[in-house]
View 1 (cartoon, helix red, strand yellow):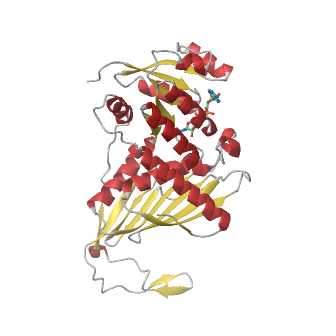
View 2 (view 1 turned 30 degrees about the vertical axis):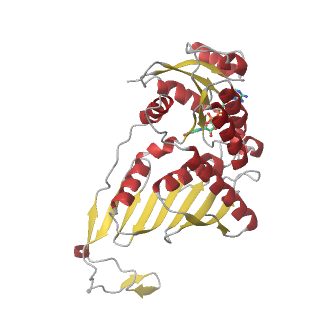
Length: 350
Ligand code: NAD
């Protein structure tokens, strides 16, 4: 039970702002009370959809019906709009990446403390079922000690031809997709990241990264490869996880994949196989009776939990799930990635 109906105002009714507009309709206790967008076509779209349209950001912030401001503009505007909204006494849900850098984020944090209002980032991909399935495998130790995780997102359309191609607006794939897949990893693995190596790609774009490869080394020696590609006409699996007793793969968003585990380490009858211009015993497939295949422990999720948690936190009944300290750590890791790419070196992190 929520105490009241919370009014949500959307700043920036683009692709994602509109996704929130439709999504909150399915959640009890929260209603869209209006939108503000600088683009006439988006204001027109809102009117056609019977939404109240504010004349200015100040007009929106002066409306007492607004309890929560959703910031869904291009990335470079998140800071300014969030600070204004907090100072106007509003709670803020801010799209990812929270800010352009850690300095901006710390500035917003100090205003948040001053005002006592909620500031929370929309790291919605913590609710992705592929991620939650890998998290389940990781937490349950299904594969034995995990020593390698590969998390990839591949497309072949380059970067969308909007502000995502422009550095000054926070374009580039590290800020776009990197922030999600780094957040997932840091949320899942309760260890320090010791080393960071990153190489950006510039296949279609010189000014911003259109993809990257990041290698993280955790305290225990666990290695994680994070990869985003936008010129990949053949996609590699979304997840590939190796433990000392087995491997897991999730191929794509449809959660198709499997686990293969060892039943018996002894595989005496291994005979060399022909491999291209030679033979190999090392790479010969195992005998069927020494391994077994399992289905993935598919996890179901409920993304409405995100907004329910926002409301419960405002009401003092819950702790926020997406914590600002976690968001800051992700931003700092992205900064380490940029340093690594620029200097072509491994960077010490924590
Ligand atoms: P978009 O370009 O489709 O929409 C941005 C909107 O902001 C546009 O309608 C634009 O007119 C408006 N705008 C620009 N300046 C403004 C201002 N000063 N005041 C009010 N409105 C303004 O972009 P998008 O894809 O919707 O991305 C918006 C944000 O959402 C970005 O931060 C992006 O990273 C994030 N996003 C998050 C997810 C997710 O899964 N969490 C997915 C996509 C985008």
